Image 1 (cartoon, helix red, strand yellow):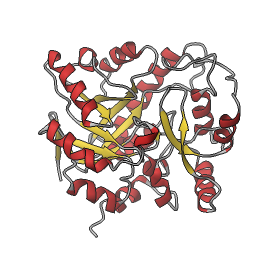
Image 2 (cartoon, rainbow, N blue to C red):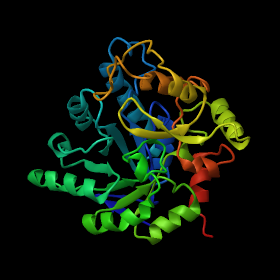
Image 3 (cartoon, rainbow, N blue to C red):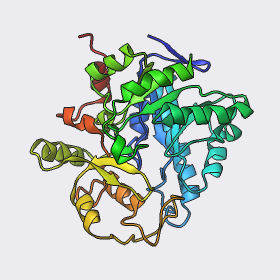
Image 4 (cartoon, rainbow, N blue to C red):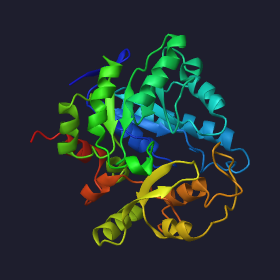
Length: 340
């Protein structure tokens, strides 16, 4: 199977969704690309472990991204594609795009807002694509891009069952995203469309392909592989507590100003009752009401990648209900592609 994206090809119908902070690790991204899929690095604070991160997060993030990209590229052995996901709501969005355009990443996808000016900053040699939740949103993006004489090279349609930030209001969380898929395909014509949010099983992925999608974007399934950035002990603890009924997958409020989906641990329960003052403001999100926020999302996500079950924010989609064990990327992809 070969799927053409711009002037390049992938061999399997899978995008590994970006997971911040540090969860879509360089090892994970490289492993997915090495199988002929699309690995996606997150551009949200990848420099969290750099010594100067607190003092100069912008430079730390750029430096870490270059290191991660180099590692993932080498691990991919020339197969697949390596993209990066930049949230539209991050501070210095334009500057990050200019930086990404100077690297050898294959392309940039943008969610958490409509990337109306993306073609202005990313050269025609690179792949660009929006992450949208509706045909209406895609129509707005494509109309705006006409002045740049560009179309998306791929489209990611993300549904309400996805982990992380969602482009839906509470009253729309019960929609079937496959109903929207056909509208997206018709609007995009020949553009490859990948659908995400609850497609991390062989059955769900086959259903998406049957409905006309080029492939699936999967985050949660890859989060619980050996190669992801979450410490192994945290992966096993979350799965164990989930299986016991002690950890539920819920909708939560994000300082970004969007709904999100994740695990209801102590942090999530606490932030519903009281404000958790940030220890340090990273000035990372344009839409964050810093003086009035319930919690610092960067602090919570960094705690998660460090394995702090109680103080970390663990984004995950509904696919977590189908995950019983930690496995390798190779094993997981083999399972997804099984011929049953």
